[in-house]
Structure formats: C-alpha cells, structure tokens
Length: 382
Image (tube, rainbow, N blue to C red; front, side):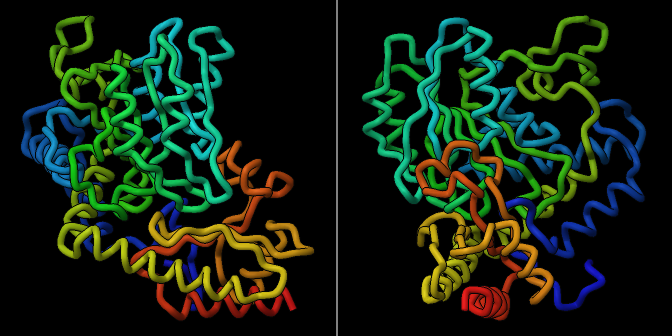
C-alpha cells in the first residue's frame, strides 16, 4: 500500500489498484509456501503448483462464458498473448482488418508484418468517441481477408465495439476475429463464449484485479496458432517437437505460479460479487466524473456511459502532462496523461498534439475520489 493515506488512484485502466486481500494472500502463499514451478516435477509442492495452474485455467474458462479450459493458454502478458495469436495465425499474403481505436499491442505487430511484406493491412476509422461502424468491416473486406483484429473497448474513451455484428460479418465471409479484451474482461459479462470472437486475449492485472505476470489467451476449437515461442513445457520432454496439446504448445517456459494463483483468486473475487455488478459500480463513478468535468469551463471530455469506466479529458490552456502533475501535487489524484499506447485514435478525437488526461475507476474507488478529481480540475480551469 502507499505511504500516503490520501492517495486517490485513478489509473485502473493501466493496472488495477489496490488488489483484493484474497488476491494478495493467494500470491503470497504461492510465492512463500509453494515455491515450485508447474509441470516440471511430481513432489508435493510441484503437484500443488500444477493444481494452481489448473484452477486458473478453469476459472478463466468460466469467466469467458463456459469455454473449454483445454483451449486456454496462460502466457506471461497480454501483449505476448496477442502477438502469439497474430503471428501464429497469419499467413503470407493475408489481408487483415484492424481499427484506429486499437491498442499498440495489436497495431504494432500488424504494422510490423505489413512493413515486412507478410500481410496487407486496412485500418478502419472511428468516430469522436472511438466507436467503429461495423459496416466498415464489410466495406474493407477483400478476397484475401483472413483476420479482423480489434480492441473490445477503447483504453482511451472506454467505447465498446459492436463485436457481435463485426464477428457475424467476419464469420459469414470465412474470417476470424481476434479480440483484445484488456479493457472489458472483468467489467463486461461474457454472455456468449469468448464474446462471440474466435480468439480472446486479456491481462490479469487490469480489470481482472489480478497481478502482473499472467494473461489469458483463448482460441475456439479449430483455431490453432503456430507457437511463437518454442522451448520446455515439462511434457513430451523426450521430443524436440512442441507438444500437440493446445496449452502445452503455447506455454513454453516457466509459468509464474504466484501470478496464476492470484488470477484464480481474482476471478473468484469477481464471481462472488458478479462481473455485472462490479462493472456497473465502476461505470457509475466514471459517469459521475464525466458529468462533473463537463461542467468545468474549458474542459473537453471523451467518455461513454456503457463501456469501460474510463474518462479522457483535456483542459484548455494546459498540456495533459501538466494537468496530471498538478492533480497529484495539489490533490494526490493519480491519473495518466499522453497517448495511452493508442497511436491512431487521437487523430479522430482531436487530441493528436498532446493526447489526453485519463481517469479510470476501479472497484475500490469511491465518490470521494470523483469529487476530489472534479474539484481539482475545476480549480485548475478557473
């Protein structure tokens, strides 16, 4: 915990804080007592590490709408998971559709593949709140189109994309959808398996209220990415070929067992309270903050009511980085400023020069945090 009792942390879209006590306890137990890796031995603690990984896989399967846990890999981070999916599924001469509202975790590997001459790439525009028209997918479709890659929710405005409509368009044309659910899983209930996409990736440390060191990669049956990383898995160790089993094939290297223990505990914490209820509480705070900020002179707000609990804003006459510094110095309000690892969306928001100030609200934030943010911005904007 912070030494400052008045710390008002509003950067949950980057990583959630604080973590539930149950999550910290699970992480600490795995690190201090279990102290073994998963999939590498048969002694007591190693078997317990195996059980921790199985619990994390099963919990993730429940959260993703009751999918098959055997179709879930648990890589070390969401950026790695997305790279595994993208590089593992594209083929030379494929055409890929992405959106201007996406995160660099997908846009950069796609641009790298385009510049390397492996794929052709179309990037759909978004509106001033980060929403993409599904009809754009149909308009951009080519005979060589294989993948649609998109963020479920914008990490700048919180805007949710119409995944059911986009997935229906792609599937009707024989394509696949890779969904970056970093800003939605844990905030938006998954009412259909994998939100209707073919591949879903998400980190543990954001809205899932887990820790860094673990992420989720789910692929529906029949979607088989080639392994991006090859190496030890603890299975079929007498062969130089990667194992055939989905999770083994995609989990080369040593898993972070404490992070997996924390992930299982975090999903249990969310299930006990209900993802819908947790999300509604966070969105309520974000909506209150957006309404208060819109009342401040010279403040422009980009936020939506039905997406991730994120409020982006700018203050006339001040660079976002300066606003963030003043907020912490004057009110101990901690926000993020800049472009938020989203290279293209700012062209459509009108914030290309400096980006935005971003406040994002988690399950441990309160109305007092909203009031402190609004009061500090109002004083600055006076």
